[in-house]
Image (cartoon, rainbow, N blue to C red; front, side, top):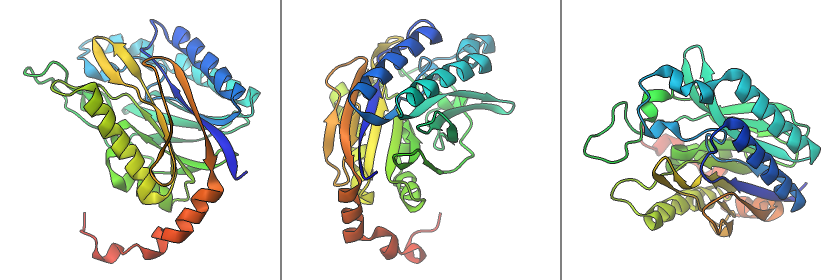
Length: 290
């Protein structure tokens, strides 16, 4: 398949329960399928609120978000819905392991089989809140750095790799996926409007990072995010699909649940990659050593 429809599935604030949020997700996947989508990407921590913006002193307070059985059941329902429509789905969630919590993305192919995972590599923020700021990102308080690298997965219509939110601020993330054979980059994000920031600036920065990753690798990007106000914090939304020239092919028009679709033209992408030939012309021997 060289051309197919992809969907960035934007979510408004999480519902009171995981089951209620899941019901919204399944309805949105039906909408994506009705538009002919063969790949749908969900936001970061799609099943839960963005709990890393607050201090939760009682570990039990996170149990509803980290319950293994509940997460497994929700992901199975999402995978089954995708399989019902012959649609691959990329879904992000909070994964509790014996050593701690990962901010995780699961890849389900068109048969509903989980073919791989990505765990957020770059963990932003702090362990303790800054009293001078209204909002502090506290992901370092909750999440371990991802340990699975930047793997690429065959989803049926396309080979795809994932990034989660802050990962998109690192050009190395995109380049690693491109060199690994990714034909599409899938991004889930929960980006808040922070303190002295504005919605417009937040959206502009997010677009720059997504469209830059697309442009510098001649690769389509599907970026799905949280929108609206959750827990008193505004999230930027503006889910979008970018083309291999860094152009915005489609973007969200609302601050709530919305399906954004666009055609992924892999023939156009292959021609651009052949023209720029990034892989052949990389010069790792002269780059600064990390």
